[in-house]
Image (spheres, rainbow, N blue to C red):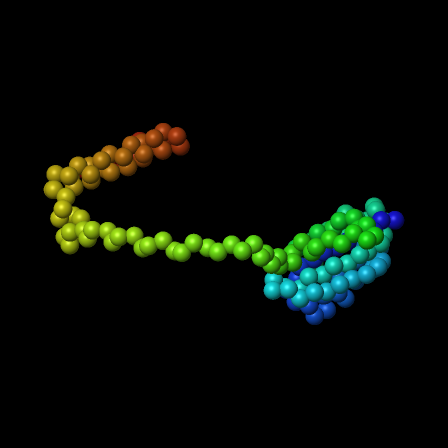
Length: 157
């Protein structure tokens, strides 16, 4: 026999203990003690169960299939050892005070109101179009060779 502690996090409290208790019983474990606590993240469930060590993997599988549980942990339980719940909200009182926010960055200089095409010369646009057409043509030829298709039609210029 082994005693295990199950810690779980769920969205809703209603019927949670009954449903998880039923899963535990179906896997051959008995419930020794339980605790439900409401937390800002949901409902925290802690259970101590007793059963065969050989059924531990089946218990884990049943809890993984339970749609009500967001997450859970199963650990060996020792008498007198108090472990905090893994999903409990931690309140830190470290005295940390965040620094004031940085000043906003200076605005970027405004671009000329003319469209990009007007700012480029006609020759630059023609060169750019020609490079794109050549790249597409080269890609079509390499693809045709890979696939084994007859040479494709040439790209019109």
